[in-house]
Length: 307
Figure (cartoon, rainbow, N blue to C red):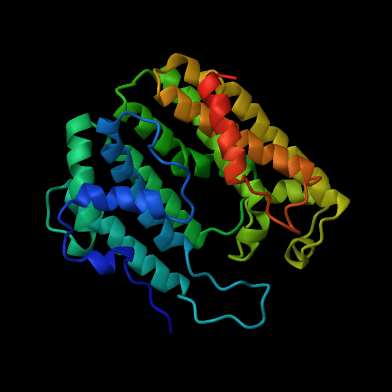
């Protein structure tokens, strides 16, 4: 039986520079957007420390699932095993917050993050929200309605945007709300982009009420059948994401450069995902639309020019 080891098991001896280890993870992780590259150099270690904390927690919750569409899967951890490892990570972080001893496997993440949190006055609640969302991914595979999906986004995506603003000294409530719109929209765009990927984890983020409304069965989804009903359903979900992107679009105009460029690039990248989905006629079962490096070069130019 496969067991889950802490992603940090190769660095249980703390690296000479924990901040550098966090930055390396931000640069090298396979799901990485250009994290923190368009923020002032003095703030990048703080952004990377937050990213490393979230990335490791997300991997503990989200990696190594057995694909239910395949008859033969390799050994995969059970839900109970995954929860055990994840809760050990969560408990270690709670101990660290309380000044207690914690699992030294995670010292390379927690040590720099605790310094960042103290120096910049970052609230515990945002980190705990992230962990609650990641743990939910282990045990919750279906969402009854859109408010349930939005609640997940509130804890899984929105804290990252708020933390980035706080790291830059931006504490205005109206800016946080604009950030929430963008982060939730980006999370939704990723969900609709990754429908086939998430099915491999027996996970469906499209609300059950909408699947029923549009006449889409789970059998159709797992069979990879992009029926007209499925395409119409995904069109509807994409329109929801577009509306949130529009509500948050003004955020970069209220921020200093270069942060405004990074937020604008994030907005452009998320909306480009939705455009790719539309160009695929809302079929994300047959293939996964992707934003290429060439796309990002063009989007980066647009962000820089403010277009």
